[in-house]
Length: 131
Image (cartoon, rainbow, N blue to C red; front, side, top):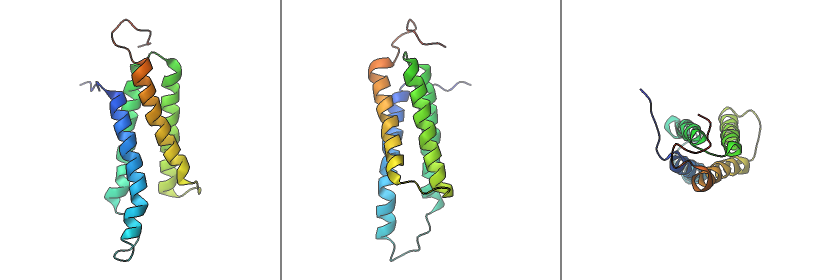
């Protein structure tokens, strides 16, 4: 069974946008509830990080398959790997890295999807992608 994503760049932008919204909302939600509950982050809430990474990986993979620009293919995977590394670092608390870099990598990934959608996506089978 082969799963294909028809609008992988759209999916990538949506996943990245939801990921950033999730990242922005987390501190606000937990600080507003600090007086009521302990600061333990629910497993479901942190699991969203990994769900966004999985969805965005499939979007990056499919977008790279359909892109006519080989540089964008590499940049998509580099941006995804950087975002993954930053989120894993945050989850395991290996190094103290400012949240700004996580937001920046998510914005970069969204921007690459938008660029790929606008300028690099093959419209038919006669484009220069390497399958």
